[in-house]
Length: 364
Image 1 (tube, rainbow, N blue to C red):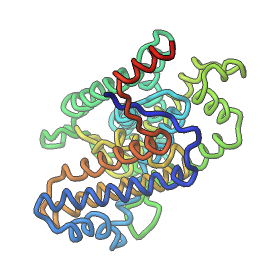
Image 2: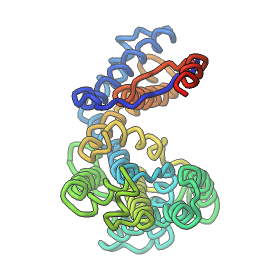
Image 3: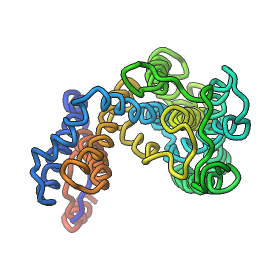
């Protein structure tokens, strides 16, 4: 006996719309079970995780700060995924973008100018795009699996960052700590509101989501992305090039990941350290799927996933659970999103090999 998934003739439109909400509800239920197994009151734990972080103004600002990179990266990944190019290395592109954009305030630390911040953003985007160009080249010209190459490059980026902050870029006045100089005033993203720390990286996220939504809905490039993603053969008949789409989607998503990286460093951290991301590039994959690969849906999904980071920190303090709980919640959410989608579009069928063979012989 074996289990097969048989594609449904027509998936339920209602359940396709409700799928992210069903997945989130299942995550809450199984998260409560997890807390109960850990000996914690599920209601208290879930309140600490999902409600307590929203109770004060300062925590709402922290939510926006954590959501900004998730949204920017997720929007870029949605273009890749919808074109059937699987960039799993956004975490590495995030890091390289942060490094490239930080070169100006670290190397030319005495230079203060209104131009430095725009140049940092551009360098961050360029760094992320060039790092994404490596798996793009390997796929477009050598037919190499981009999932593997983009993922492996994440570890290259992490080790390169660690070497920089412990070696040539280490702050000479930093008491031997592995970190760079603190950025000058002109190299720091300003705050959007006087009531908290939310910086303009969150505005970049909203602008990116709106622009990409417009591109996907109203432009020829968006139509090309959709057609090639659904059927490469149909795209070729329409005159679209799958090789050019590989380059476009990978560089586009890499540039947005790089923008997220330099925005995070310039706005929230204001220097480079050995670790500058709690895994934004990987979490953004969940954000993209939870948002149905729709840029506007990704904004909402980014806020939800950002809440898991804040909730994890709050739960550590209030009920004394491990920081790994955040990862468990994110993993549960991705699992249920993919499971719901699979069961909505496919039905499970049990195939008895012995009887199938007999029926085949009878047919002949």
